[in-house]
Image (cartoon, rainbow, N blue to C red; front, side, top):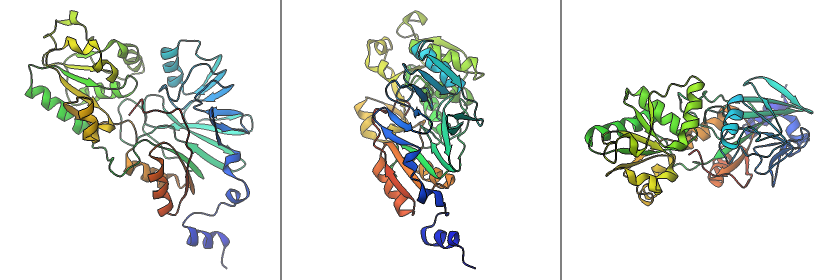
Length: 358
């Protein structure tokens, strides 16, 4: 006996899910100017302007904004939002435990690890048998500062596309840290200034340096202090950190040392306090040499907190999704890859998302 589901899979290369034909997924999630909206749940995911109810994937400022009436996020993301915006960043908050399902009106909601930064999560929404996962930002490389990404089976997968071009294939982050330490040994008379985004990337670089055996004090810009202290309070040992001030030893007192600061500080007067520094920058964009030259980066470090091309395509397959929505990034290339792989796909063209944590 020939079953419809077997014929469908043979013809279209995807499992038979009749409700995708009878119920359009946009009834569960749809883009609006405020962000991704769930009509039956009455909430937005990572809204870019204040709303009544927001589900937030992680603490980067392009996804987590102040002013919402109610926020549901992991405990770490709520703590990070409080550090960045103040304790009154929302009228009410609720902490979501990873893997535990809660109901928001008629919709079942579950948070799963995204591997992006501390507290980051994918959000699974379920309604009338339909499962949609909003990935937020994610990566598949192991990161000692946050929980490892978990593929979540779903019907529709909403993926980021920051590095969705085949040219972007990130090397192992420990190899890049090895290049930094080699330069420190080669130029003991110079300070190494490592640019890294304040949330996630900076702490990851510091932890990777410790894992590579670097036990010297690491100097940090003042903008990193609160977040580094918070990471330490969550059991992530960053070792001895000291403020990168002139009082620490004068203009030449940082020779042979490593200084970590946000990229914006490197174009500021703050960077002038270091004599003949080696300018480094930890980012997936350092794969593009022109970007490194434009920033005046002497030692580019290809360390990203976003999935690269291979990770993006592997993740889509891992979810088993028969439909993919692509957002904030190089959308067209990933949509085309999905089409060639026999997976229905479309760009969402959401606005207001930048690359704070690249």
